[in-house]
Image (cartoon, rainbow, N blue to C red):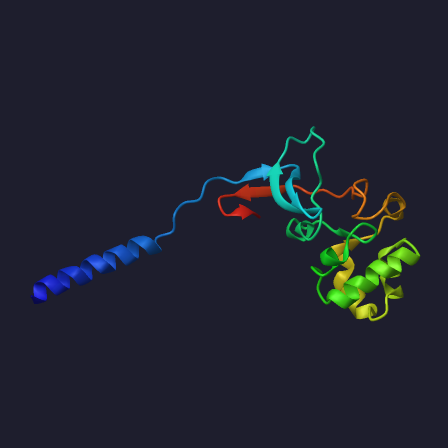
Length: 161
């Protein structure tokens, strides 16, 4: 009986050890042009890798943050602004309302929004971009609104890196 319990314990230990051994991951593929493959409410819901020469749908909405792309101040909707640090639903709506008064010419124009001061601006600076030409074509409500910033990404077994 003791021998049977010892054998069962040994088998369990071996199984747990086998589960703990890291599995080698495949080589990373470089994604030269992450593009939108599906959207929900004009926000990117799925992404694919396209050949660089193809002009495909750009990543929109909060998904831009996942890829290190800036949020375009003159295009984003309130829901996208909420993905930024220190921006809640009220402040996000204030940004949209301020943009309706006048497009953001530069990132520093965020200081026009009540409740955004120098400290918050410095936190947001690397996550947003202001392109006044984009503001002329519309906002996220208009399909023409897009940003020109695209970076390269690596796609691995666990998803985007």
